Image (cartoon, rainbow, N blue to C red; front, side):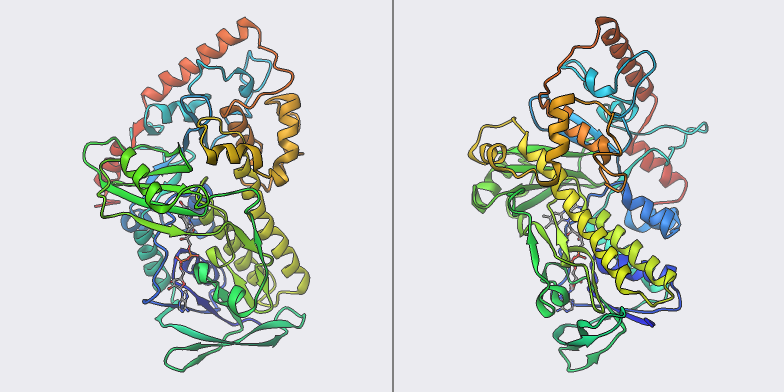
Length: 501
Ligand SMILES: Cc1cc2nc3c(=O)[nH]c(=O)nc-3n(C[C@H](O)[C@H](O)[C@H](O)COP(=O)(O)OP(=O)(O)OC[C@H]3O[C@@H](n4cnc5c(N)ncnc54)[C@H](O)[C@@H]3O)c2cc1C
């Protein structure tokens, strides 16, 4: 029976796992070991709607407590500067799947050149608005949103919340791992017997969580779980990162994804800081060229304050092996586009904590197999969805983008792309071609395929009368959005309510 857990790693993944376990199974002893010498990766500032759901619905964290320390700003979606349109929006609401009264087909069929937003939330994004207003004028925090979070502030909040729950946190360097057979899940497998610390102490546990980031100390180095690369579908492997202190720039309620010569750049909006990162392929562009392009397009970034982060795109073949469960970068990472890592970490943590509760700390072999299938599929689903972003972006004709268009393996996305090419933005097969468990859903695919103007065979123009109705509808979205609240006023309202400083 699992009674005590050691989490190796004090980045977002380690703390999210420790907090999930302790919140749901308070009788477990949970201890976090983290290395002050290695530190944390310091990126991971953009989230999806899964992250606030994890915090407030699953962990039942008090919103006020989180806002006060983590100081998030709000994100309604992504504004893509991508493909032939000037830009398009992908929100957390179902805007492309919707059929509006008077229109015979779903939204995607009406998204012509004149259309800049396709629903109430993208209309708000187009006007830099973040919230509908409650009757009393306060921001309606139920607007479907995610967060932009400064990584170190997020970790500081996670750290303090973990301490409040009684999780023990220790600064220590793990320098060795003793492995051998374990039967924790009712099946004999190679697992971890003890972690060896730099001062010679041995740390034992019933279950180890590997949250050691890209070092993957337990799953990768000690247990040698094979690595499955996504390099056939995704070619980027580095990001050069920089930013500047906000002055009079409007705080945008979305992430920008801008096409660059050898990749793309994010813009993530914090209350006092604007963070930019150029994600590129080192096979197409060296670090200095990438840095120069980022600085040229963002002259406010201090030239001496950029840094390069390297990564590879892929995952371990299994998350849970013997008495070791991996979370976060120790298991997998796809790439920063669509900001999915914290969402997958949340998924991993929820299933792990619920497994402990429901089995009373006695997980069986089938549970572990299903856990592995479910969580590895989550990484593969992201690869598939991102492949669609790269295979169809016609905005630039550089060697990198030509390679993306010619060589990207669509992997699991091939069928939905074929469906779209035959049938256009029809929703007939939603829930069939893309299962409900897919975090982007049919909506996500429609947003990217319609947004990038991927051509389809039966391109039938909707009747002129319907197009006129559609343009009246989008004008009504815009009028409604005018009354909504921007991020600055949202922050001011929270400040007045005493939620933030
Ligand atoms: C360029 C880039 C951009 C990204 N952007 C996003 C984004 O926008 N949104 C998103 O969700 N995700 C993003 N990610 C992923 C993001 O890094 C992770 O979601 C998140 O930070 C979790 O990291 P982690 O906790 O797994 O690893 P880390 O933050 O690296 O933490 C690892 C921990 O393990 C400890 N450790 C390691 N080895 C040892 C040892 N031997 N002994 C003791 N302690 C040890 C370290 O000290 C540290 O505490 C991005 C990643 C990259 C590379």
